[in-house]
Length: 83
View: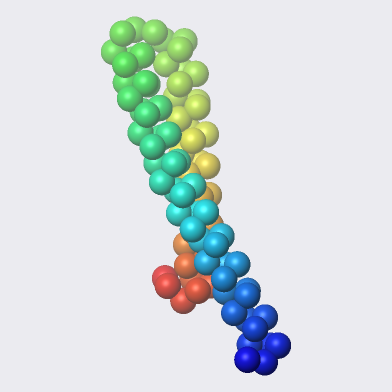
C-alpha cells in the first residue's frame, strides 16, 4: 500500500470513528429530548407554570443541540458516501 493510500485509509478510519461518536450523540440526545418532554408534560399537567417554562426552555435547547448532532452525523455519512 502506498503512503497516499495508507493516509486515505487512516482518514477514512478517523471519519468512521467520528461517525460512531456522532451516532452515540444522536441516540443520547434523542433520549434526553424524550425525557425532557415527559418532564414538561408532567409540570404542565400539575400546574407548575414557572418550572414548566424553564423545562420548555431546556427542551428547546436540547432540540437545537439534537439538530446539530443529526447534521454532524449526516455530514460524516456523506463524507463516507453513506448518505
